[in-house]
Amino acid sequence: MKRVVINFNKFACSEDKNTIVKKYEKEYINDKGEKEEALVCDVFLAPLKGVRYDGTNKEDAMLALLGADSLEEMREIANGEEVMMEVVHQLEKMLYDDEFIKEYQDDLKKQAYKAGYDEGFDDGCFDEKILVCIKLLKKKFSYDFIKDITDLPLVKIKIVERDFV
Amino acid sequence: MRGIFDKKLKEERNINIKEIENNSYNNGYDDGKSDGEYEMQIEIAKKLKKANLSNNEIVEITGISQEVLKDLN
Image (cartoon, rainbow over all chains, first blue to last red; front, side, top):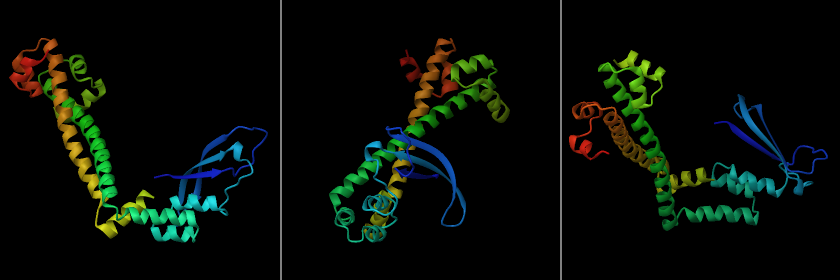
């Protein structure tokens, strides 16, 4: 997965008063010393000109909470800061909220089921087309006829013929 | 943040979200695949019928039953 880096108001802006978003790819060295590609988004928010997120202020720390790997790391980032500690506390509380967890699981189950169903449906349609294509090829129907019936492209029909008939 | 929550659920509540998602995905996949196959059998059978193939040939090619074929428009 490609890393995405978002910079807020970090680049100098010209006379343009509008919000600007620049996207580009950049190579960087990760923690393991390996080269990796990152998608960088420089965002200049005109109404917040002068507000600079450079890793030294509270807003940066709050954003860093999103990137933490554990509650312990979140606690370290929060460093006693009231609002951020509340986020950590609420997360901990949610872990023992059975009603929430049931809803959370149900929601994820539904989403996963739908994602699986959609992919399965497409695969099922495709597999059936291939199966019919094989049968029609064996019965010596013309390519044009098979193309009309299955909606498969000619090149695919010929591959099926080569590999399965 | 969801990653942290899921990890903690596994560690502290023994609830494996990844496994739950995978099971649901697989159930959905199986159901979807079977529905997709059936939908396509019906769609192809209709086309073959329009192309004036015999009922026996349509049944042989698509795998649908004579009863289902009779009900097709």
